[in-house]
Length: 258
Ligand code: ADP
Ligand code: MG
Image (cartoon, rainbow, N blue to C red; front, side, top):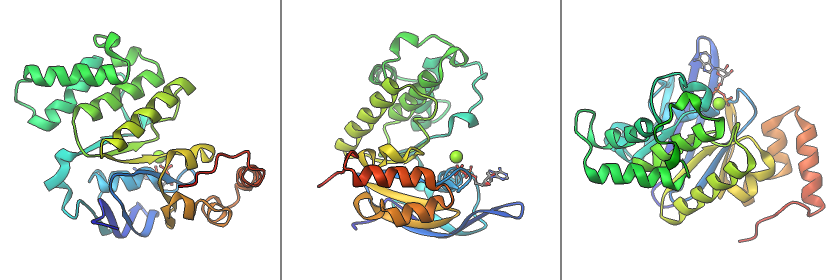
């Protein structure tokens, strides 16, 4: 692997007395679409928050572009899990996306006309320009998700960390978001996406991190999306795994060959 874009070294995060991540080590390649998967409570959100400096590791550390996060933060966009955002916060769709520009320029700078064009373009990309004046509290789940994606796009970073961007969105929105993600990858961006649907994992991700408090596996999807590794990751939840491996065997499942 060329220089890893994100690395974790012996990363452990303990909340109170309960570990959410235990001694996690990995390196992620750049310019790929990378999935973070694992059962509920397996530490996926905690992993993104550790990378973003939102939670402090109990031990170990992460690096982004082989640097401390602060030095490269302007290049990194983070889209938190929907439940963690205060949707009653009085802000319009435009305000939220404009925040992506303030993140880039600093809070007290006035937005230039170029910034405003970027906000407009970002809203257009996610098909939300018509809603620019709406309060975010008045949007559907899928629309809210698209607005936060537009904010990340407006920041014009190189690395995107997204926590369950497909949760609570309809199929049309999911298809739209995944096609945007693939376009971003083609434009040289790196995308790290927490995801929970095993059925779409192979078609969405080039690379996977499988978590269950500990790291179960990290590698190219074609190498780590195996019956054994999925069973190790999801433990008792065998019904889904059994069904998926059955589908894989029956070849109904879209397997990717590169
Ligand atoms: P995931 O995103 O995979 O569902 P999380 O990273 O959100 O998992 O949580 C991992 C574990 O840590 C869970 O058991 C969760 O209950 C716990 N946890 C997460 N955030 C906190 C917190 N702020 N305080 C205490 N426990 C937490
Ligand atoms: Mg989570």
